[in-house]
Image (cartoon, rainbow, N blue to C red; front, side):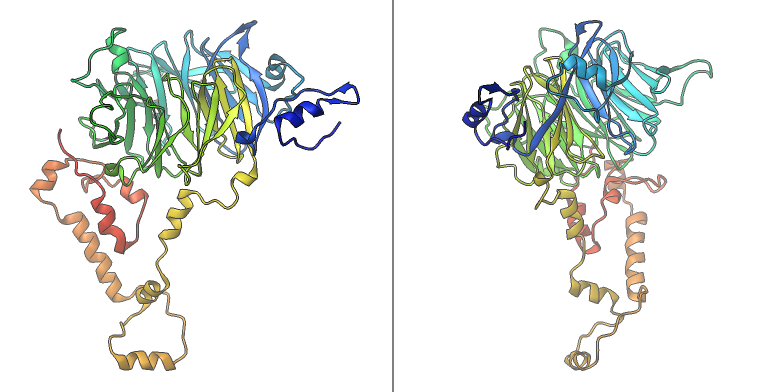
Length: 511
């Protein structure tokens, strides 16, 4: 029996009984969830024993974007087909069996994070057994084991283009950089880290937690940034995000943190539960234990967070948040049993609330290819799928598209750029006004060539002892011998805006 979409809770109650015939119940979706439809839910259990999900991730390629990988506390990895029709009248266990593609035991301990690599042919899993494993997803076979941490591994991230390079963060307070191709012998599947940084997020002035030293300095999240040489790390100690150059890991290049609003009441240090970045790598979000999600611009880190989002509750380090690939929305779990979605360009608005879970909502994930599909998991032993209606994307531009639009030069400046000789006299202006407008020749004028060449020479050859002492091999000012991209190269700016963009980067120090 088909009915129109109800507008109130009372109308829902009225429609449940028609002429004495009781229709099937369906969950009430309030105004907070308009535009967001639950696709279905699956239960996480093995041999009749439920297990709380810990991490989830959609496949990265468009061909397999409907496959969702789930990792749980029992050490299992389950691949689920999210395009299967999950009926409301079926139990969550029946839905799970219907949508299951395959599953296997990946670790003998909880799996805290996972990551698809090699066009979804392989997968990385990080576990509480202090190891990272590389899996052949077709054969369900372990290819490599990355060993070197002395605590549970909480987070992993891959290089944007060379997915043989991996960074991991551990509860022992260290983060490590790995090359999965490096092993002691051909027959040995164990890989040692290329480099490891101990006590990356320790605070000398912080009191040690009674439950142990490892928890107080735990690395909770790591990111391999899109410039291909930088890392971002966050920990349980405080709300500071540290940025590192993989070519010089002795000290962080720079750091970012929210500015304290009060000098007396806000002296407590809040840790960060998760970091995320958009597809272009322009923005980074940090889910903080002060119940806020902070948005940073990687080109303006010294300004602190450019936007702040509040409304959810982050009472444990298992609660995560994630920015959408187009940087238009932020999805976050919450300790109150709901999930929250904010619009990036409207942080002052109340978030949209997704109400279905019965426990703390922990990990969340956006489908990179199917716009509007998201997944949330909870301590109620279920994973729920949601569909964002297209209306939520109408009349809205993502920050990434706005950034691309402002790069275009004004029409007057474009004319000057292609003009061989500037018109300085009034007579020339009168002459040009009488002559018809002709399209300029598409070539670079000599004056512009000289300007471009002089800029390159200045950028590459002018080096002083002061700059070398301050930045030996910084990602923000690399030596000429290393012809690699940097954050500044990845996000080019117009020439006339170069000086302002350059001043936004703090100089590297040895502190």
